[in-house]
Image (tube, rainbow, N blue to C red; front, side, top):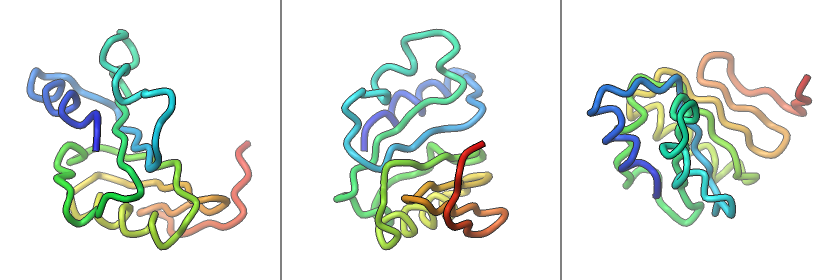
Length: 116
């Protein structure tokens, strides 16, 4: 997991993100390392969690009270445990995009999602 340390520091210093993006795949753009370097990008920080990491063993407290958007994983059997672990860590809401499926902690699961 990468990017969470900067988010924890940001919040301890009084930063108030609107939410957090979790990339559940290797991120070639390394957004997790850039979000805190540019004013305005700190509204939606990014954390990278690799598919090989076990969600239940991660310290996910960085998401407490935040709306979490998860992208990058096409396998439901990998995406759903991370979704559930983020909720267990007291995220306000978790919205996970998994292939053509959206898993939303408030509205349930939606198949064949097409963005407007």
